[in-house]
Amino acid sequence: MKKTIALLGILLAIVITGSVFFIWQQNQGTNETTPETTSAETSSSQTSTSSQTTSETSSSGQSTTDPSDSIVKRVEQMSIEEKVGQLFLARYPGETAIADSQTYHMGGWLLFGTDFENETAESLTNKIQQLQADKEIPLFIGADEEGGTVTRISRNPNLVASPFQSPQQVYQESGWEGIAADTKQKAAILTNYGIQLGLFPVADVATDPSAFIYDRTIGLDAQGTSTFVETVVESLNETKVASTLKHFPGYGNNRDSHVEIVRDDRPIEELRQNDFIPFKAGIKAGVDSILVSHNIITSIDPNAPASISPKVIDVIRNELGFDGVVMTDDMDMVGLADFISQEEAGLAALKAGNDLVLSSSYAVQIPRVIQAVQDGSYSEEALNASVERILKLKQRLGMIE
Image (cartoon, rainbow, N blue to C red; front, side, top):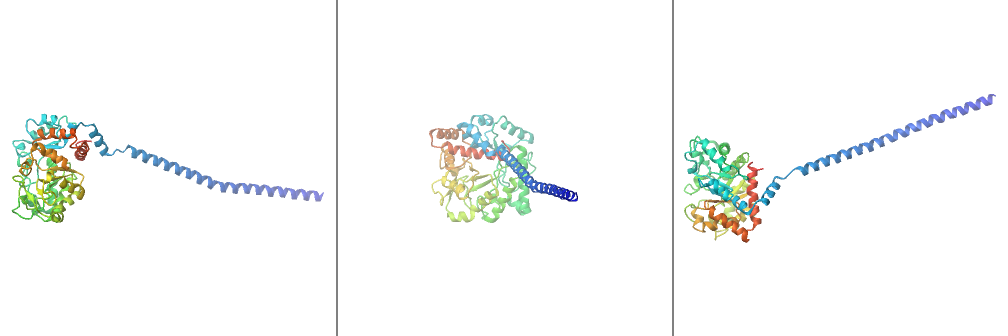
């Protein structure tokens, strides 16, 4: 009997020990499995989140439209006549301006001193608003406002309290801070009247007070002129007024191409080491446009004025690396008008690589350019490239979306 009870006790002990061991083993298995499951779930969750983020980023990327895409599409939808008209910034013709802007699909009007005479703030604002009325692509409205000897709107005390001072005078009185403040004041006044092109700063390097261009410059050497250009361009970049460097490749101390054909015989290396420097500084600062002179630069192209020379425009595009708007000086200046007929001048300028022609003879020049596109002597590819640059600038200035 005692043996039987002892045996039963041993068996009970074995059962209890086995049960305890089994429970312990189950718990161990659970503890080892749980981290693996958690890790897998975390990994899955991370993958899902990453995938979702990637999807959202991708979706965001797809919904973001490059502004230049809208310009390309707009150009594709334009007729040849509409595209050619955009390349002309013409002298304001007075009473025929509204009709002509519709007939020729003008890119813009350039106002001179006489166009501001007898205007009040209200009448000038109304005049410009009427010019812009119902325009699918708004017009550039321009006026030379360098300050000093070249001012338009500020000659009229009804529009501006006093004429803008010359850059030299501003600099002498208040330094670079004064130049920046003067630039922003000009931009505010121009913008208030609906003018987007002030056609400044003058980037010519002239150190001889007897030189034709001297009074219109900052009057400093290449480095000083570069600082002037940078200051003005950076100040205008904060406004809705375009910056324009002129007059490439630089007048230097040469004569006046308004009244005669001018030949500039300086070596190309002299131009590179001196006159090109402010233009390069302006390009680096983000200038919107460059205006080309009518001077014949013999070291680049001895056979044609700069404004209609492919070789000169090539320097701007490929040596200086500028891809913004390149425009001519006024086509009526003697330096060009005595060299080529007005009928052919506009086409010659565009074929040379300019994007914008400053002209009074648009009524004969525009049809000539249209004809050239139609007969293939001026490629539609080149036409489109110029129109895209013009419209991108209008977009930058908030004129179009």
